[in-house]
Image 1: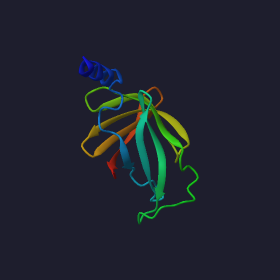
Image 2: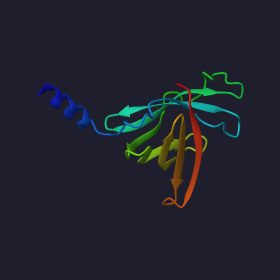
Image 3: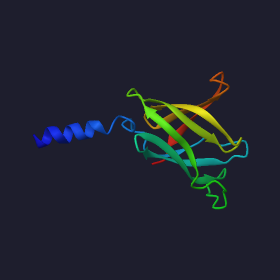
Length: 130
């Protein structure tokens, strides 16, 4: 009976972060050659991401980056098939919040932000660092 209760308790936590997205992900370089390291982790029943480091073109950390610790991703819900949606992403380069979807394939996270009701979207592949 205890095993059944344990299994039910684990299932009740929901699939929000059951897809393997937890970890640290590196973005593609921006127009200035800087990449961000984003830590993705559960936030209640949703998935969130926080900026933990900014790196220059040579991979050196920039401790003066003004957005360290800022939440960049929130509200993501796991769909059970490697995809996530219903979330938002804040784009530091443009200082905008966009609706967001993402899809996990191994150690690549395809991140897609959209605005104008989903008519205009831009995506990039992030790679898992750890």
